[in-house]
Image (cartoon, rainbow, N blue to C red; front, side, top):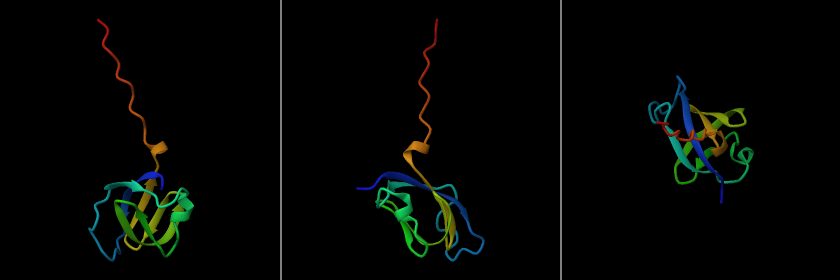
Length: 93
């Protein structure tokens, strides 16, 4: 079983082979296929988020969690990156 993760589309490339397929800013939720991000970011392979999305092949790894495909730039967001909501403060009367 993989780790829960989100994938967000940061940008569509101007020379996208499949333009306007996914809107910029769209977020997908699912699971990584393995525990380690480095094992799922492989140039030439598609990135798959279980139960959610499969991208076109990866052509460049920009950083540990950001990559470029033939059409777009994506970022993997792990649960530890998602800010926790602030506690509700009660009104004092």
